[in-house]
Image 1 (spheres, rainbow, N blue to C red):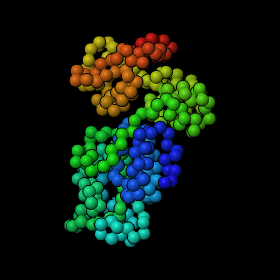
Image 2: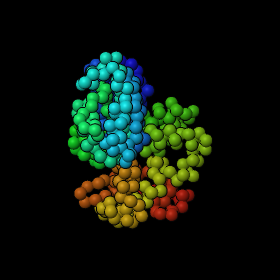
Image 3: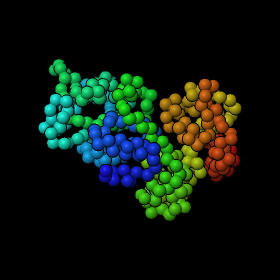
Image 4: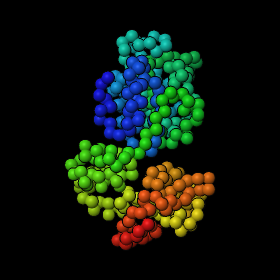
Length: 304
């Protein structure tokens, strides 16, 4: 087995599952990667391709991926040397990666390829295409219908990184010293992509970058603090719809961008009653240099 996963930091559970799957020495099974953006789903997909010696073919889903597009792309793979059933005479393999899979306009055209390596042709009948491992990635797993999700034997959820893992990632991609890298990691919201971007900004501007950007010691941004301030003033559970209305934001923005961060930090809880602030969380004892109120001065210290 090659070292295609050796550069992956963290995600130990997923890496172990991928390695175990690759040891079977048969075609790597179709895989569904899910989790918030910036956690390295594309990097993991490339690593699987490298681990299995497969040619990596990457696409980002969009509304243009109708049945004809699916047929064109799959039958456009290098099928020379293949026999019915996807049997490959020359040993060439493919890893087809579809990012943002929830954006596909229709999932039905994928059911047959995932099940039997066949494409339903627009001219009628079926056509075989080469052995392929499909890896779909999504930040919105609930938008994939159950029949689609069930066609992936491996379902891997990528989790936010620990501060230690982010510190390692930052140190490997920047010249920041250990202490500074750790301070940046703490503010990086568990996200590798954000950690790398923050590290680049700190290399250029120093830690003043966070003050200028109004990013506090927990990595909270103005909208995050406004969300918490509304909950604190209400002093009760609130529905997502009410929060969105009071903040002037869409429910999708709060659900997909703000709430994962606050949940990961233990600052809020979500139940059948709605969204509630958690006063006994670790974040509640941290001093922020920014006001929790909309329009608050950044030089005023508030202890939450």
